Image (cartoon, rainbow, N blue to C red; front, side, top):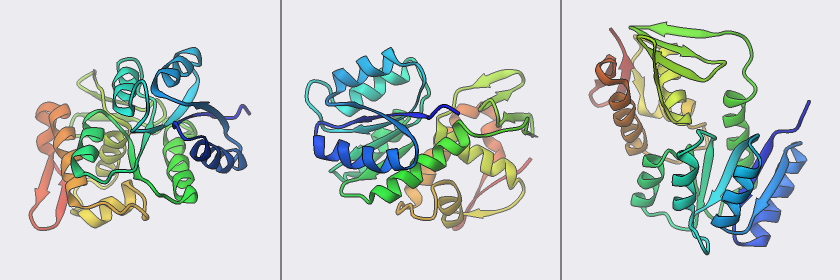
Length: 224
């Protein structure tokens, strides 16, 4: 079985080596780039990259610019690394289609756990599991969402969130439970992260977005 390729983009060689060493131990093939411009060169030269770990602050082209360019061509999962903890940065990342957002300093083990959680969904899913409810259809193997035969373009995290709602249709889910299940138990986020994703998901689902009901003071549930 071929190793999954991960592109690590950071202008600090020490940081690249730290991340690379932990990923190699988990049997991933790691490619590196020192700045945003080089990152795009590597990405477009290798069409089989499974995931990108992308630093925000870099010379020549920052992480936001790289993310925008990649998203014009691909839905490859992106994990953003940043030394800043500004909420506006985090929201900007999610608006651009970032799948995970990790602030420096971070635990390499936690980073690897996030990588594996994403790749389990995007690269290692087997079978022909299809979830259908209320006119929404999710092909989990193909990672495709359709409404009345129209494909809906979702980010990885939006896809995970919708899948979780579909798997628990009719059940009121607290924000804490959603964070634990969709963002992993070690995610130290808050309710605004979920609310931002639900808002975007509802918008992308159009009229079907109304199926995601707000449970005031608690969270959300998917219900016809």
